Amino acid sequence: MAWTLTAAETAFRDEVRDFLARELTPDLRRAGRRCAGIFSDYDEANRWHRILATRGWSVPHWPVEHGGTGWTPMQHYIFSSELAAADAPQRAPMGPGMVAPVIIAFGTGAQKRRWLPGIASGEDYWCQGYSEPQAGSDLASLQCKAVRDGAHYVINGSKIWTTHAQYANRMFCLVRTASGGKPQQGISFLCFDLPAQGVTIRPIVSISGDHEFNEVFFDDVRVPADGLIGEENQGWTIAKYLLQHERGGAWAPMLRARLRRLTAAAGVAFASPGHEDEADGMALRLAEMDCAIDAVEATELQSLRAQARGEPVGIRPSMGKVLGSELRQRLTELGVEIAGHHAAANLPLDDGLQGDMPIPEEAVFSVSAYLNDRAASIYAGSNEVQRNIVASHLLAR
Image (cartoon, rainbow, N blue to C red; front, side, top):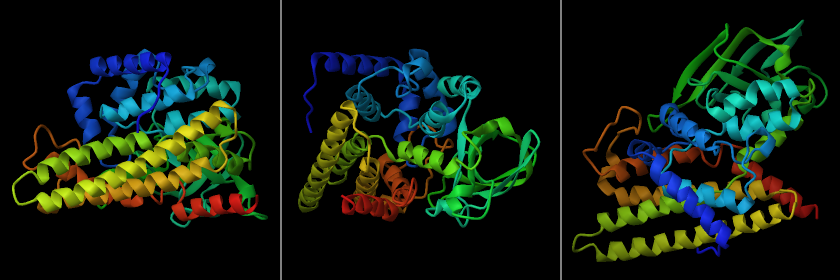
């Protein structure tokens, strides 16, 4: 889908492209290209974050007074599109895109001065303590408990699916500080340092062989009470605010980058004589995906215009989550079909793979992406829950 850019937007796009051509090294591009999971591994992604920080572009969506760029919504969209097209490493958003907006909106001046600079620079790396073994999509049923003891909270319980906890030096965590009444009313939002005495982190290796997730156990863990964001038992309001940022954002740039790779892979896979019918059939299906991405992109551009007018986000993040994640899954299914017999290979795309591969890299990526993206319709609020949110909003009108 072609956009009509103003002269200023075209100049900005060219500025971004020039920066990427100079700063995005071949090894960083390879790390971005091989990321079949949610985010690139810490070493490459955080190195790229620090490079962006030197340009002042690591946290462009923040308010200018805290280090943001002041870009227009369209400039943000152009930036995302150019990063995806250039195979830049996918940075984890737990710090810049999730806890930082919470700190900015609900934190004290001291908390902002304490945490925001390290997030922007890449010095600090955060993980999210939300889900529990019995509290996933029904997050309000969480039981990880924090009891106030003087100047500290004492935490007991566990969290699960804690992305990149093995790399993090800080955590933001939902804890239960009161019982009785509605379960949402007894939840608080705490930030604290990792590692800490009494914290145990155990890896969860995914079906693709990647280690992105972890279980985190708390056994009488003492954390400073000044890490409480907002007021005690106000955590549910803060959690909902954060989830809007987790579900929001643009899906089309990443989807279009994946489609570009699939189209190139299909051209190679069906190039030999005798595969003309398969090539034509796959070309038609890829064209259908192109049209679907155009529709998502049109919806996102419409949202940008609404955002520029100052309209509230409403149900747009939930709509985007459903459309984007399910289209992402459909693309991975086509990738496995294109990979053909190479799909039987079991080569996790981790730091241990260096240089060229013995089989087509895109085939290995496609299988890992297929396995990883089964979770895309679950994380950040399952798509069933998002459909309920959309339906409730529409039926209430």
